[in-house]
Image (tube, rainbow, N blue to C red; front, side):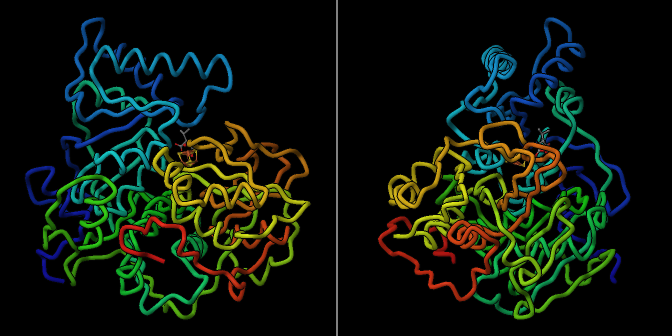
Length: 441
Ligand SMILES: CC(C)[C@H](C(=O)O)[C@@H](O)C(=O)O
Ligand code: SF4
């Protein structure tokens, strides 16, 4: 290791701190963008007001974003009041604020152009690691931190060590980023990357379209990760241009140096991997799908900041086009954003799914954290494209949740039991007119 070799994490935090830092150092840095939502926003606002008093000022209101997504539309008086607290604050202080129709914070942040490679982004939501799929350093903070950063614009960090997950070679058909990340979490455990950056690389990762890279970064927190990063490349630039309307030029130095110091490196061969399912009730319970295939499922839930993008929902439609879901199974589809919803509408994906028997809900978190419509009863077994399956996560403490990819979700909805998507006669229907940014799989 040459002493100047650095990880992408060390490079981003060095730039932000204005001096050379390495893992273990402490930095104080200005935040490029920050987000709070209808659950964490009101508490952050309360903290801000108690810190600054009546005449407080938000340091950089143009960098502050609020979304209304966990209870969208409001499902009770408390939620409705919380929405109004956020709306009032945003209006008073001139911050950005998105409405109940707009979607999940992380998807909105990306679509609305708040995320660029090399940025330092915080959110009062644990899945703020998602931004690393675009080469940013994104991390979750508590409401107290967020409320304070409204006032100061800055936050301190300990520069994390990095664990690299490297996947070489092509992924087999039916195996996606979701399967990779479930495998990684299964291998290192739910706390295996605590306060580390999970960095994903190798030719299989470079081949992934951005919507799949975002799955890897999103779920870094499920192994304790402070951040999850994929080095940005031309695909990142194209994606940001098409999906976020940003004109970004690629900094060739925004990658980890080849001899950077990693705490651990895990290597995989793409061709060795099978579709994965995480059994109840921890994402680390990942197994090859063979082990659980045939398990009856009462509900399939497709959505969330992990796998609620257009390409995910379309993967389910590809399986279900012209078919009916199993009569003993419900299928709930919740698009991650209004834009995703509109794309499903314009391309016929929505019609396909509704024809197949799906319930299609408005954009937001849906039942992901057990807050909104579609929660599970005591005896319910669900397969979800979500990121967490802790006890009670999607409703009753007795309910059971399995985690898997959208392709597995589609196959499972079709047969009413956990079903391997490989070998299903799934077609990609080209009449779904809107292509993905990179023409991804
Ligand atoms: C409500 C919010 C604090 C929470 C989080 O931070 O992750 C939620 O989004 C979740 O996924 O459990
Ligand atoms: S979709 Fe789920 S994981 Fe993502 S922010 Fe909403 S509740 Fe949290």
